[in-house]
Each structure stands twice: as C-alpha cells, then as structure tokens.
Figure 1 (tube, helix red, strand yellow):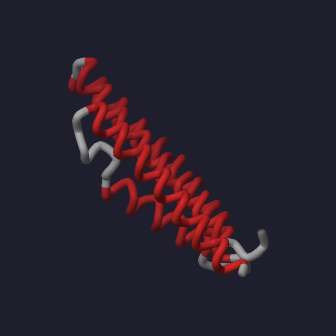
Figure 2 (figure 1 turned 90 degrees about the vertical axis):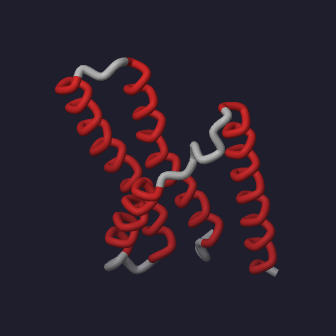
Figure 3 (figure 1 turned 30 degrees about the vertical axis):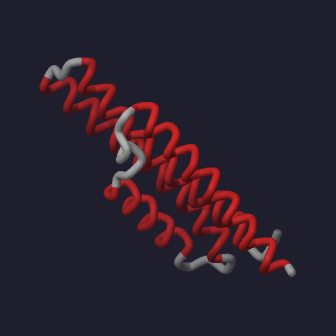
Length: 122
C-alpha cells in the first residue's frame, strides 16, 4: 500500500510541477525557459557526489541536490557578475542571464522534494 501512495504522490507532484512550469512558460512566451541542461548536470553530479558515501542515499541525494543548486547559483552569480563588469552588459542581458541562474536552485529543490517522497523513512 505504501508503494501505491508513493506512486500517486509522485504523479500528483510531477503533474503540478509540469503544469505550473508550462503555464509560466506560456505566459512568458518561451516554452524552453525551464530547460537548461548544464544546470541540471551540475545539480545531479553534486548530489551524486554528496550521497556517494552516505548510508541513506535517497535522503542524502536530495540534500546534495539542494547544495548543488546553491553552489551552482553562486558559481553562476560570480561568473555573471564578472562578465557584467568586464563587458559592461546592458540590463536586459543581465536579467536574461539572471533567469537562467535561478534554474539551478529550482532544479535542486525539485529533486529534493522528489527524494522526500521516495525516502523510506517517511
């Protein structure tokens, strides 16, 4: 029975998440606004590295995803700020880069929430 509840919870979570992302993308007019593969790769690699030597791999993978999201955010912020200062970018380019910057944190928390559903300790 617990297995069925987890599957239903995952389906509800993913439906709400993808529905909200689709609605926001449709409103902005750019359907690929929530897709950034380098951000996802950074989060997953850091989450894997964090959970590699831990006992509760699912919980620690979720924790590592959040840490990876914030580390990716800081890396992107430093890079974006340096590029902004050196190339004297305009505000529109800065805000465009800023929207991609937040995707890393978004991916980290999405994975964390999914891992909380999958965790057997709950």
